[in-house]
Every structure is written in structure tokens, then in C-alpha cells.
Length: 120
Image (cartoon, rainbow, N blue to C red; front, side, top):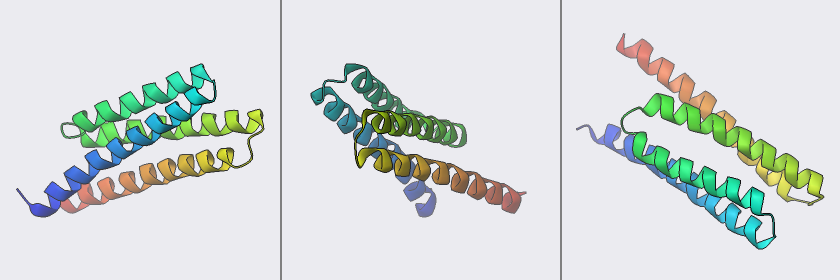
């Protein structure tokens, strides 16, 4: 196996696992704050990201694009909820996370198209 391809496959899994851990910690913070519904949504997103880390080896393109879009939408909704709750800095942090997921999705699409053009 090519070393570069091996590292890239491992980094895909690490990205998803890190996102899962971030959502897990967000769920713990929401649970401590008394917002059970938001905590449950965070835990669900953490589980989804960690499950995607196991699936990404079989279907890398579909899995990453789907998870990135779902994460971006969820982070945007959480940002809005924190904004409506009157928090000072949390809405901006979650909006930045949403933006990062959107940029990651676009970059991944561009890279995959370039790889298809080169291989064709």
C-alpha cells in the first residue's frame, strides 16, 4: 500500500473521531447546563461521527461529504440556539465550526474532482 494513501485514510478517520469527541464534550457541557434536548442532539452527533469513522474506509467520498454537511447544519443550528439563549461568545464559536465544516466539504469535493480528472 502506498504510504501517502495510508496516511490520508488514517487522517480521514482521525478527523471524524475528533469531531465526535468535540460533539461529545459539547453534549457534556449542555447536560451540565440543564439543556437535555441539546445534550441528546450532541451525543447523537458524536455517535454519528464515530460510526462514520468506521464506514469512511469503505465509502470515503459519500461518507465524508454527508457527515460534513450534517455537521455544518447541526453546528449552525447550535449557533443559532446559543444566540437566542443570549450567550456572548458561544454562537460565534459554533458559527466558525459550521464554516469550517462547509469549507472542508468544498475542499474535499475539489480534491476528489481533481483526482478523477488526473486518473481519467
